[in-house]
Image (tube, rainbow, N blue to C red; front, side):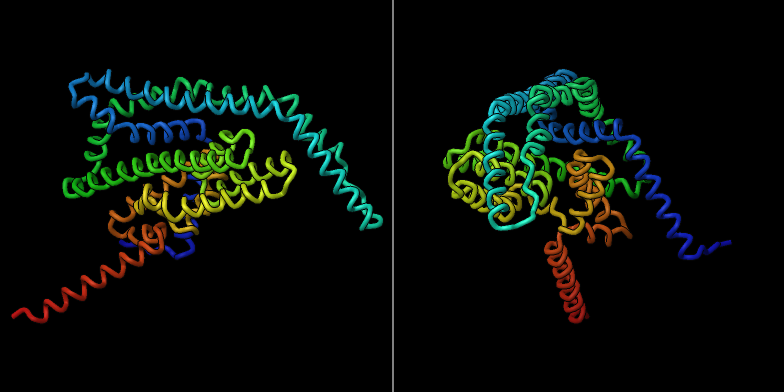
Length: 372
């Protein structure tokens, strides 16, 4: 006996399921975020581990050396930015003086041109912002290290990565055993594509970040902006967050140039340099290096950013983009879910795919007409 449920009942079940998933993800953030980051990093360095195993290095040693190499690279990056932030904290007095100077100019203009308008209270701004920075400059830099140096990051995540790498074939076999024999070929294909997408995304974004850091550093050094490497690296890393990241990354050096330089041409020059670099990034570097396999349409990307920020904060904004790419691969391969893969994918790629499919169907129809 088939029971047909009304549409509003099905919709309510879907919404309740979605709400339950969101609640679980928010409550289990401490567990899920390190697991997902570890899984992505394990997939990233798995080719290196496989290569070590092929040259007859024991599996445990190959995995351990891969994890140690990854930790060394990440530690070097953290140490670099830690030193840059310490140097930046030494210029807080100069920034406070310049902010006070520009607030004074603004108040003079307001008093000369607008009667009855209350001037800006520079002391309040300086007390709320710079006093906090003075008191917590060391704490902020140490806080970055403390955040990275928590038990989760320093101890748990390397263990996760080690176990993911060591048992990677075991986990693949488990997934394959979970499906019927007739579906195993498609499941194996999905696993291969997911692995390729993750590796393309992380390695591609790392190369793009390196290129952007070099170009940003050249631009800022050429304009004589202090702490060029800090601003260049910060802007390059923020580029991982689509749309919002490049805006924040370029705003900080523009504001710093405005406060520390006597001519307005310097912030204008920083703006133009970052704008041109961003044009190259969005139209050349990312499409060519990261590739179309990870491209998402802007609407779904923005939704993923807001949902990721709501659920996991900054970690969610970063993790949800490759997560969407993985979902797209799964949806494209699962029968009946192609529409959702189409929804997540890049509009131009989807149009090309649809057009080519229609063309093949037309050719088959033409060939069929000439068959006897």
